[in-house]
Amino acid sequence: MSKYTIIITLGIWIIILPFLGFPGFWRTLLFVISGFAVVTLTLLIRSESSSRDNFRFGGNGADAYVDNGHEKKKEK
Image 1 (cartoon, one colour):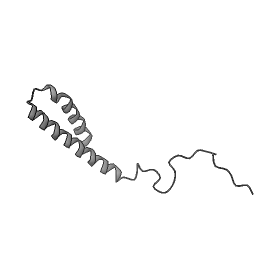
Image 2 (image 1 turned 90 degrees about the horizontal axis):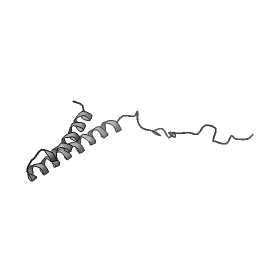
Image 3 (image 1 turned 90 degrees about the vertical axis):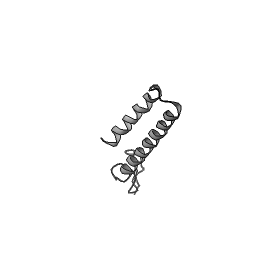
């Protein structure tokens, strides 16, 4: 399973967890473990995506958006 699928599955687990009838201690423990898993997977995904250069704007000093014809032309 991909990390995205695991995060979606954990999200569904967190949604249905209060309705499963676990005692208070176990429910809290499962919430904490699930939360740590979501945070860990999110940080892993973020570190993988930030190491790629495909999604970085302005890495070479260029702007991400340039308005066409907005700059003044030098007069000679």
